[in-house]
Image 1 (cartoon, helix red, strand yellow):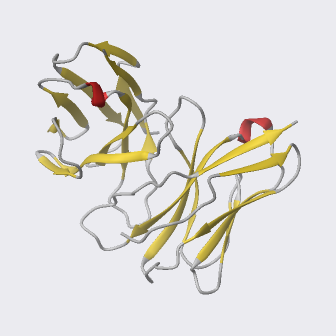
Image 2: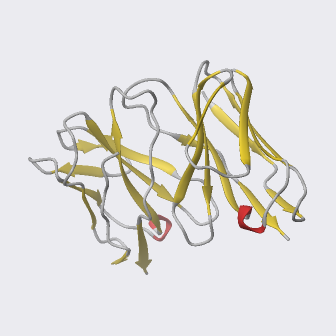
Length: 112
Length: 113
């Protein structure tokens, strides 16, 4: 499975935008980019995913580089409830299963 | 809508005792099912996944096993727990679609003493 690299931690102020980077230089043409977040003592929660084009949903936006070797999760206005560990994961199409391998993610701290 | 149930929420077990954690999914059929483990302060480790009844794939060799006796039921077991089995165990499901996201349960926090 292709690997992702994320910063261990980031800090943001409340109501400001947050850009969480992810590098995936060995991504293949059939890999989807998924983002999840995990609040303390809870299971991970799906945030967003994309293949080539930028994506928006009610939670966040996903900006994918033209060469697909990196992506950025954008939280437009951080709130205290956005403090969590954010995971960037690649999932290969056409494999025997939809298994997702999680890395250590980015711990986002939001300051009031 | 689909829901995933996982129990118990917390569990304290002595070393050498057996383990059985259960996970069920409602509102969908033939889901892919997964067991993950998260040690304190660490990322998620995929333990087992299943694409159908009786079909189990193991990702990490250990003293744990998994079974899928029914389409929407996934069980994680151990005959004899080790201290290193302590952690946060998460069950998850998704569909067989190529970009289907994972949906996680609320987890079981296991402490082996």
